[in-house]
Image 1: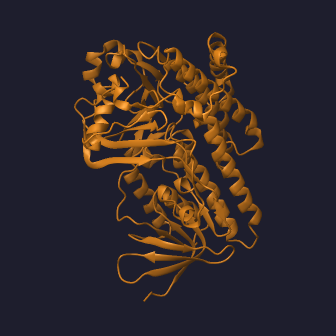
Image 2 (image 1 turned 30 degrees about the vertical axis):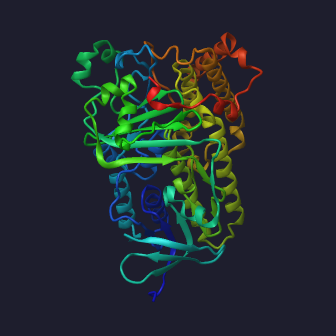
Image 3 (image 1 turned 90 degrees about the horizontal axis):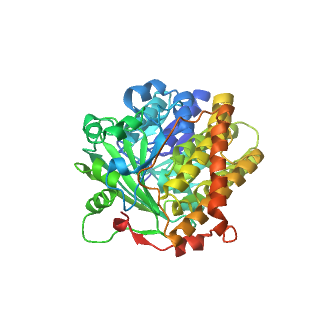
Length: 520
């Protein structure tokens, strides 16, 4: 026997960052709104999505107003850094390095999601949201243009029903509405898998021990290496190393299943993960005394997916519930920033008296276009060239320069309005989209040719490029022009071999799969 239903204006499924920030923004813009947040956990645990970049940093600090909280409880992020190795690389100081020479100029943070998510949900509750916890939505009955009904299970007594004009799905990788309604689609062209854990005992990148062992390496960087997102790079894979407040690290690997096979065997997953990470000379130094935290070793296959429908007249999907592409460059938090900002706008419009049919259609069009072009330009077949220092040196500078000039600059100049325009959704993005797509394809083709000729990764040892840093201003266009010239030179010196043999997905698959443990 069910208890009487409870009626709300908005019910949000999922209380972590996407759901909590949706509730908080709704109540800030319309105090007194009846908002319920349904969260299945009693307390949040740690989760991936710990690195912010400039857009998500803007969203957290300027839109949600968390700057003081972030500075007091989380770590300031110092950009991204990449480490390469080949058969000649003996140790950390031999690994080719790509990253910043100085401190970052635009704020971003390395966040412990268990504490950040609790903070934002607590602020939403203080603003007036009803938090139902622990509770789980068993079924959502959608009624376009009408009242939505949510069957709720709390584990205490009979099931309850909630009704609301709008439902926001912020259930993350669970993708409740997309799976329930048949909207869920795997991005088959991007078959990636991740294995990760939290670790204790990781070496201090900027401490005296490593400085004494590798003095020239230590002196080369005038900034801070430890609080960057450090990437260990390999052929068909990359690993992240993200510090968390309190001394733990989040460290894991992502690989393209067409290029890499995870090492099999009877050893526990944590043991195989450490064995692989230590096969990279940089990882071997950093993790020689490290141990994974018990019960915090994870595996997830086929990372990329999307929802075919992002919104209806009565429901909107935000954050990972709407789609996910890849953790490289940490785009998930940017996607969260865009989907939450536009999702809140759509809900508030739908609570008015005007019809929202056109707004729903535009929302679906913009985010479907954004996802497709984001994937095609930045990520499609990218794992084919991520393990080559020379190729990444060009690709990363191009990616970073265009991100700063075309994306990061927008909220700094125009405010929150820029978060209502997801990446590649506007007609003006056509030229940048075609440019990024072009050089990504060309770098892929050249990577496959380098493998054929046995020159892939030839500069992965003994090289170092430390960048002065990009700014979201036109004067940084000179650095972008320099990267474009580097691409042009590469085309003239070796790219011509592949001008009439474009790299397609089947070409990447034919490159062959290797066991990760054999990489070094």
